[in-house]
Length: 339
Image (cartoon, rainbow, N blue to C red; front, side, top):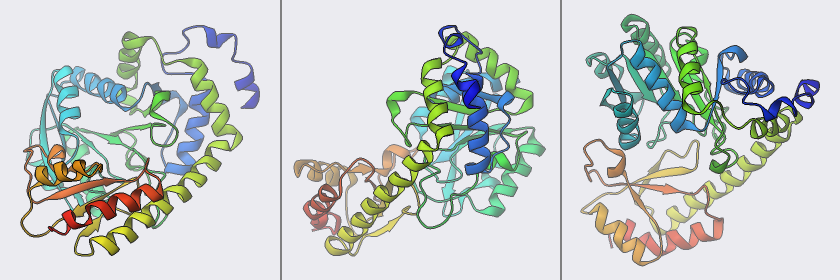
């Protein structure tokens, strides 16, 4: 593998394979098999420029096969998915999420033949898709001739147990799994990957070729070397420790300054959900916190209805240092308690 990576510099100056550089695809396949329990074949991996492009490529390919409606999690990312679906000529419909993940029975009652979801760590609630719903979802996909688009974001950052495996590993013929380095390294790198089902691989490659003729090869080679050398794994271990410390600080600050507030979604990732009780107005809370130089984000932006009740706030801690977390919660503790 090292020899292959070293042999690439001259070829790296050409457009190359629209799927992406073979060195990165081979290294990535090994990494995803080892870390995400994915059924990763280098021949069916497409390197893309982040999640947004991957989602667009997937939806355009599905539209070519006759899919007309795509479902998405609610709460979730309604604006992003609806815009991408519209661009591909599809309609998008929300399906509710509860404490066990997406409601598969409600999904089955729709005419959707595709669903976009975050099964390992649902955005924004933080729940993991329950095992029985994973199986029900795969059965739905096979009986409906449907496809699951798995957004495998921040899956490596779990604190209570080993990371939940990718759904794609259970049904490689029915799942398009999309991952990126946006959370693990930096959004500016614009490197992502798609694990494509055999029936859709050529369509996705064709759309990628037409879209941009391939992602930047030199960046791909750098990432391949980073993973192959073990530096990527060491980086992830270090960052898990960093984020776990910030998570612990957030929990401690809330326990001290807003003990009445129930907090969920802390098992993985870089955010928590605060559930407020009693009379409260989401927008008033956000404005009052902003006046105290603290940024809070309401769940309403993640709901298809934009409903502001029940009042839930998304508390991010990924890019906030521990001292700032403590200071921020101290400043808004009274607001969270309704005082």
